[in-house]
Amino acid sequence: MRPSTPGSATRRRAGRLLRVPAIAAGLGLVAGFVLLGFFAPWIAPHDPTAQDLMAVLQPPSAAHWFGTDDLGRDLASRVIVAARADLTIVILGIGLSLAIAVPVGLIAGFIGGHTDRVLIGISDAALTFPSLVLAIVLVSLFGAGLQSVIVAVGLTTAPALARLIRSLVLTTVGADYIEAARAIGASPVRLIRRYILPNIGGRVIVYTTLMGSHAMLTVTALGFLGLGVQPPAAEWGNMLATTRTYLATASWLLLAPGGAIVLFIFGLNLLGDALRDIFDPRLLWRP
Amino acid sequence: MGLFALRRLLLLVPQTLGVATLIFLVFRWVPGDPALIAAGPSATQAQVEAIRRDLGLDQPLWVQYAVFLRGLSRGDLGTSLSLKQPVTRILRTRLGPSLVLMAASLALTIVLAIPSGVVAAVRPHGALAQAVMGVSILALSIPNFLVGMILMQYLAVRLGWLPAAGTGGLLYLVMPTLAVAARLVALVSRTTRASVIEVLNEDFVRTARAKGLAARTVLYRHALRPALVPILTMIGLQAGYLLGGSIVVETLFAYQGLGQAMITAVSLRDYFLVQGITLIYVAGFLLITLIMDLSYAAFDPRIRYA
Image (tube, rainbow over all chains, first blue to last red; front, side, top):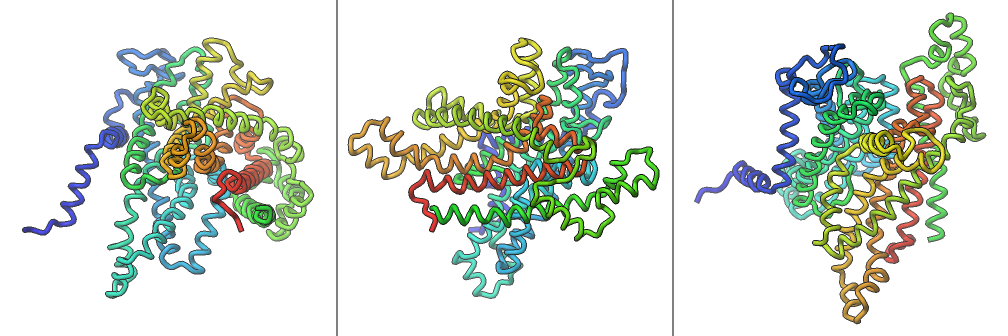
């Protein structure tokens, strides 16, 4: 009998997860958008910034699948290029959030005492701000633009994530197997890597997925308010903001950017909710 | 309960002070020079200096902080740079419409979401249950400003039933309320369904049924009250959304509330006005958290605060 390696067990578990329809559909949608964003310059049928003042506000046609905007730019191309901006912000913003929250949560939960009190005090102070209010304040201080929005997403989501990780660590630290590992002389680093992280990882992934859908709502809201990515660069939220003026005569302007936002967030929600049912059915809250 | 409430109320004082200090520090850290912005692009160096003296920005940080705290204790939050009015006067005219919008959204959520969640729990395979689960995940994927734009397109532009934007009577409130409430209705109906299903499986519900009570009595007199605790928790967790979401929706509908004023102030770099509005939002958030904490005990007799 050959002992199964951890790698093959993980692969088997991943294979089982993919057979859940909601997970497959959600992952498919999200992966589709990631590919779209990554290959945006090659996929976009037209130059997203090329203006054609002879063909402004055209309804959808064979040449322009989703029509053209007020400057005659191809909406399909703009939405594809905007996918790159929006996904970059969400991925880097969540990355920043994890880079802050994972160490802070682990240290606070594992070391405890004064360190814990200071770190949790800081995150509680940040949590007294409604998250979009904090994001608006941060973006208005740093000045509107891509980098500011990434920082705003990272800083507004990190406190709650750190708190979650800390509470997950606290529930595992008291377990017998941790005690046993400690008794045979495992170092703190080994305890965290070998025993704590694998135990809390699933729930952190669930939360991060749902956080991604929330982050996209924040990013597009900031774009819509004129505080995010600045025109002429395309971003789904700022594309919808320009639409407002022409809504009465050109309602198809809503279709492409609106559809993209809804499909992407829907994919993440499907994925997150299905993963939550598997990893942590009692988890009630959402970011 | 009384003592807990009192202690929780007293805690509000240091909390507010801490948050005000935090906001003060964050806004003093701003890279742009407010005096330069207030003076306008054509001002001379001497004029900028005069304005800086006027605003007290030439003083050391601790003096500015003392002035800020003294103003705060008197209900004075400085003067708006763009509107040349006391910030508190602007807040007073803008707070009302925002409170009305948030209260209407919350009321609509409770009226729609709790009954539909209960029905979905009692008849898990009925049409409403399917709709609650199917529509809600879609509703959670649509940003509130997009809901607002679609409503505006149909109810105002095409059908002409409602005014497209502005503040005024009840008609102006309909679309902003629907736009803010859509996400809340979805979340709360899902939570209600899950919570009621869980309580219906409890021993005390089985006992009530075994006593021969009518299904209706079991549901309304025994199951609903404990089921309200997770529902309240969910509503409390969404308080931040209610405040933030109203900012976006107010801006879309040119609804003359705090949020719309905040976005205008941000775009004009009206530093003291943004600071004042932020303070109101954070204080409101603290207050909602307090009310939620106190109301748990009222709905679940098992929760006791010593």
